[in-house]
Image 1 (cartoon, one colour):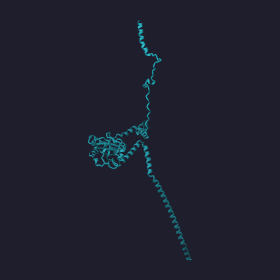
Image 2 (cartoon, one colour):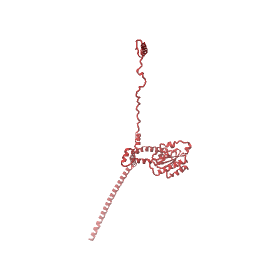
Image 3 (cartoon, rainbow, N blue to C red):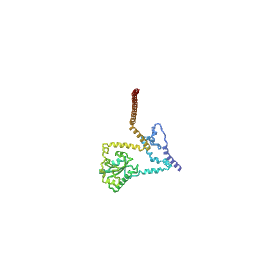
Image 4 (spheres, helix red, strand yellow):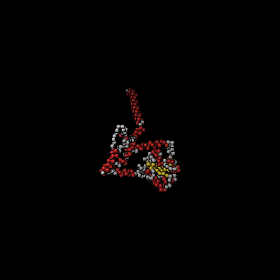
Length: 356
């Protein structure tokens, strides 16, 4: 009895399960069911599909000048002499090139870092476009010193730099010159500013006002390069006793553009030549000098040849005239001698006849 109950229960449980998995199929008269397209069964991305590759980007080609500057920046004296092969080569000769380079670069740190270094690139930002009120702009005074101490750490430039730094330090401690700003210009590495201002040597002291429109220049023999003297020069505004540069080529003058374009040309020339090795510069400058000399004296060679030809011709004519004159004199003497002998012979015969 229990067995029948269990079997009947199992039969009832299996009947709906069988209905879920078995289909009687299509029979005549039944509608046809549409099958969805295979590509619509799954619209998602394949789980392991590789992402689409981006189009290869072409690298921007560099100009020959950019490539040259890139190579020249790496071929500096420090990089070449500081390389492994160069160090090993100098070690064989007993020369510690590393110490030599360290001593050479030590001279670059001879200036007070608190004083801003004015260059062709930052001059406009630091001085011309300085942010300040109208009152501050009216009272602003820039004291600039132009030296060559970075290239030649000795002589009067180094003396001027030391006292300039000392005067700056004393002013910071005293705090009695709030309207004065201090700056330094390296004459060797600044071309545009010094050329536009007409400065061709160093050291020089420049008093700048009105955002660079009013300039006063002082050579070492025109100003005392002592710390105390520089401070008195600024505190008492003794620079006002000197007239500013007001020629046609000065800032704001009618011919200021001339100095501007000359400075631009010199700056571009310096930018190109500073990347060249010194030995190559010697060759180039020697060749250019030879061409210039030949060009300047191009007519003198012909003139000298013509002058030498005229002189030789004149000497030849003088020689011919002298020979001709000598021949004429000789003939004249011979004729004179013949005439005298002809006149002397008859007289001698008469005397003999008279004696007889």
